[in-house]
Every structure is written in structure tokens, then in C-alpha cells.
Length: 127
Image (tube, rainbow, N blue to C red; front, side, top):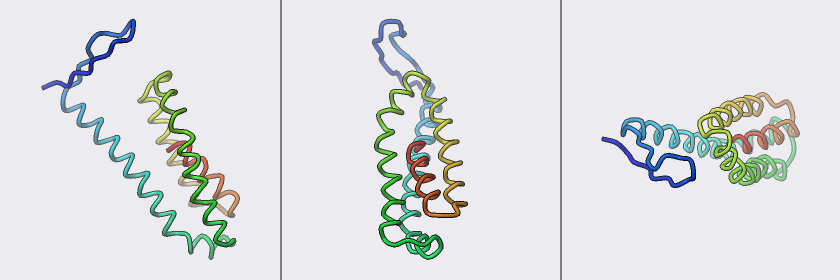
């Protein structure tokens, strides 16, 4: 069985056909990436008291850590969609996954609040 996607750009073929198994694989990868993003946001919310205790700062610090990610994620949505069209969706997905993973590592190893906020911002952009 195949999934048919109808496109009408000037130089693209009229129909692109994907095997159904491959379509499900693409769907699974996209869902796992979304779940990873959701889990990351939940972990940051739960880690708020530990962040304040370990790195210092007050409630405003925790708000910056959470808001930096959300704002960067929102700003990057439309830009990354267009870049995916220009550079290739697979290439951009792999770049985002790699950047997100490295930014997560930077968040875990952050020695201070400023580094953590910068790493969370990068994490949001790569998300």
C-alpha cells in the first residue's frame, strides 16, 4: 500500500508516492521528537526549585529559564519551516536534533544561571 501526496509546483512531479511503512516511520520519528520536546519542558518546570537552590537566583531566574526556551522555540518555528523547504527537511531535522541534544548537555553542565539561560535559548531554537 502507498500514500500519495499531490503537489503542483512548476518543476515537481504531479505525485510523490511513499511506501506506507516509510510513512509510518516518518510519523513515529516526528511524534518522538514532539514528545522529547514536551518532556524537556516538563523537566525544566519540575527542576525549578533545584535550579534556584544549586545556581542561586530567585523566582525570576526560574521564569527566565522557562521563558527563554519558549520564546526561542516560538521565534524559530516559521524560520525553521522555511529553512526546511530550502535546505531539505531531513537535513534540518538532523541539525535540530543534534543541536537540541548538545544544548541539553550544556544545560546539564551549566555552571551558572547565565550559561543556563543561554543554553535554554539555544535549546529552544534547535527545538
